[in-house]
Length: 121
Image (cartoon, rainbow, N blue to C red; front, side, top):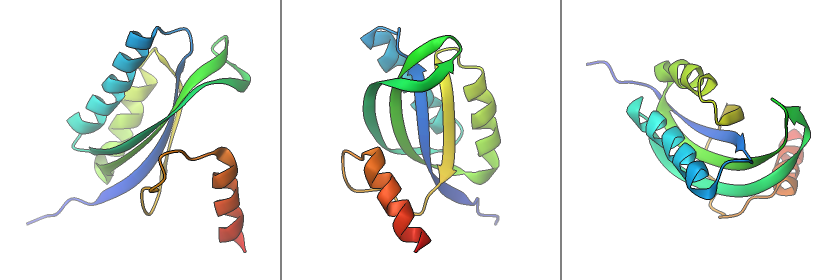
């Protein structure tokens, strides 16, 4: 019997800041249901809120940021990426492999940089 390999991912998703609260929540649920429909498991979401971006993306200077932790069968990650590219509410996204889901509810960029600096030492 073949077992599927699963990987743990951290995904940074930037939604349009112009979405209403209900539309933004619906877009977030759409991302989660896509992950689950491809055999993944949603572990945790951290809502970073609305932030100014370093540069404009698709004419937008601000975006609403979500950090989503999920496990996914490795063979379906490319399908997830393809489907995310078709999502009009999604300005930008990035998924990276991680070893474990952080336990803190709020993670700041400064904490992420400090962890990365410690790994480099």
